[in-house]
Length: 82
Image (cartoon, rainbow, N blue to C red; front, side, top):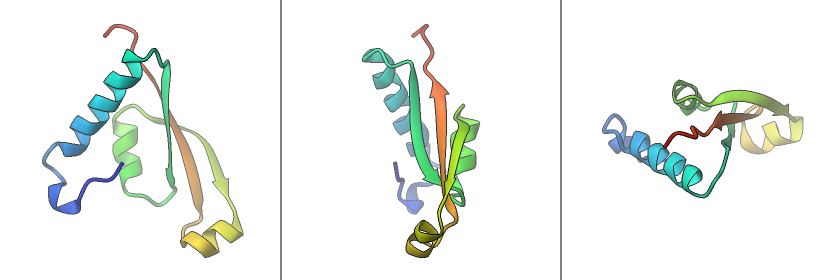
């Protein structure tokens, strides 16, 4: 998911995430997962929205290729009461 920086602070990301969570619930998913880089500033935003880091991966080749030390897997349980 990416929101144009010009749209930051306008609630676009919140609405996209809310829609994605609703869709996940609608199709019967019990959790959502996402992968982002360890240095992505949006990671804190995901965590504020209930995503929890569950695994990390570092790799020297990945760091040379992407310019960041690694990736993190975040997960969130889907509420069953919607």
